[in-house]
Image 1: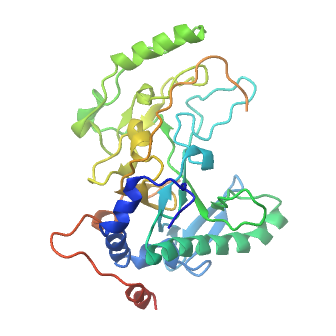
Image 2: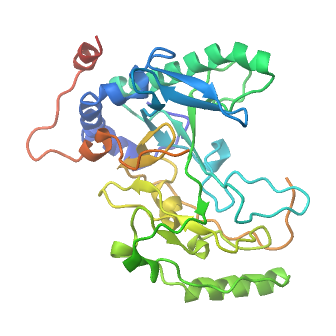
Length: 348
């Protein structure tokens, strides 16, 4: 099946279909249906409250209300469709403001239906859209009364008026940078290489040379230095630098994002690991994410924006069981034979 990812599909999509990757993923999803957004009912399973800033916060209903957490599956889209993994994140400069230690920078992932997916997985993806549509419709009246709108979770891939929303927008709740130092003692000396901050305004060429020197001096953490709770020098990001950033103490935060091998993905590798076409499983706040299938789409690594500025909650650290138990790797013997009837039987 062709998706909004494009008509000229790379080999990774065809391979997923032919080698049984999609069937294995559906087999894994069917084991954790109670954790999946596609099977959640709003407002029976979860509802929202409004915080002091006027933003909606969703929580699970029941005897012990807590932050709502459910899992989403989808294929990563490129920045033209809204995915934003850049160093500046959702920050929008105006006048002469800059990103400081007090600026909350967040990133965004936009997901589409997996390319050439099986019928079962395609329907499962659109069931997620259905849940998000239920939220949208029920919240509209409240928003009209309160005179504000919450951030949209869905949007159409087509620019034509009246087209249905088929993309899922996930804002990564945890900030990109932090001033909190919660590193284990043995890692504190190595996880944050010190780099001199550039104070003086320079020409673009001089700034580029300086940034190149800074990045060459840095040693990327490896092994045990990459861990949950670790913080790194933001200059490790390929596009960090220039007049927009004025960090003094803020450091780059390690998110609980994991590759197909189960290893943590350091933030400077997001562009190559979470590129267009990557199939991911994540929770609705993106506190946790795991890559289910890698992409071989062409990847573009951004660079720092040099020169003048052009204006334009707490949670559990333990990931859901579906993350630790999810395994879509090829079986040693026969591949899983999962039908839509089996999945539906578990939902009844």
